Length: 106
Ligand code: FES
Image (cartoon, rainbow, N blue to C red; front, side, top):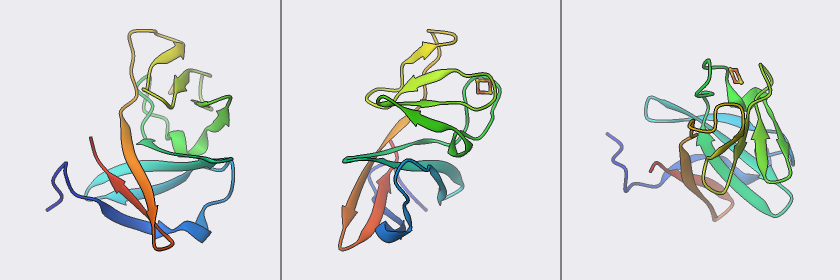
C-alpha cells in the first residue's frame, strides 16, 4: 500500500516527451507527469471541473490547460486561473532518480 510519504517509481525518464503529459498510476490513483523544458510536474489526472483527463491537456506558460473546456491550472500550486478560481488541482512531488521518474503523492 502506498502512503503519502512514499516515492513511487512510475516510468523511465526517457519515456517522457517534452510538452506531452503522460498518465501513470500511483497505487490506484491516476497521475499525469509533465516535462516542459526544465520543469517537471506531477498532478492529478482528473480535471476538477468535469473529470476530463489532464494527461490529454497541454502545457502553457507554467500551467496545464484542460482540453475539454479550457480551464487553466498553475503547476506551481494547482490554482485555477481560468475557470472557477475556487477550484484547485492537486499537485504532487516528482523527481528523477537514476533515470527513473518518481512521484510522491501529497
Ligand atoms: S473538464 Fe476540464 S475544463 Fe471542463
